[in-house]
Length: 181
Image 1 (spheres, helix red, strand yellow):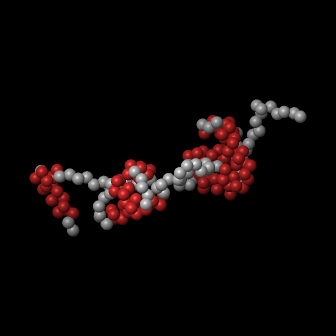
Image 2 (tube, one colour):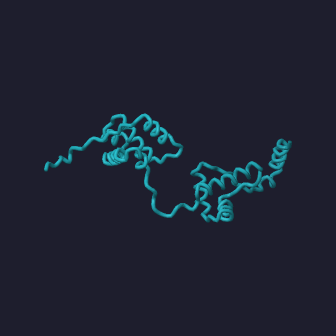
Image 3 (tube, helix red, strand yellow):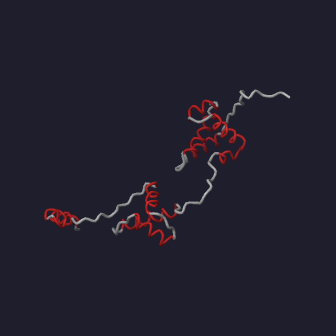
């Protein structure tokens, strides 16, 4: 029986159909694509363009074995090749605050702002979330999740500086007079 030289590596090349190329483009341009998945889609795209595994690895800054692993898995899975590219679910407890909870908080803040009602602080939002949805989280955690979604809200600032200074009182009255309809 003849053994193969381990230094000789079989080249793996992907040949996508036009429909698969369109699907690859759709997935790569998705609104929320994890960086690791985007790299794996790029591996498949470059392989389809005729790049070798070492060229792809050098271009993406990955190890050749990593590129080979995903190209080989994509080729082996056939029509369901897209299923092997995303990361598997991570073990552990699911997050307490889901996207639905954050959407509810955002809606509350938007509606309050539209009506000209009060502003909210992070501790107040955390209490509201606990009372209405039964989800207890630290205010700092909730604020961080909202910042990750690029959602901003205005916190109230309490000051009495205008009461001590007559010039500021006059300026505040003038500002309010301009706002009167």
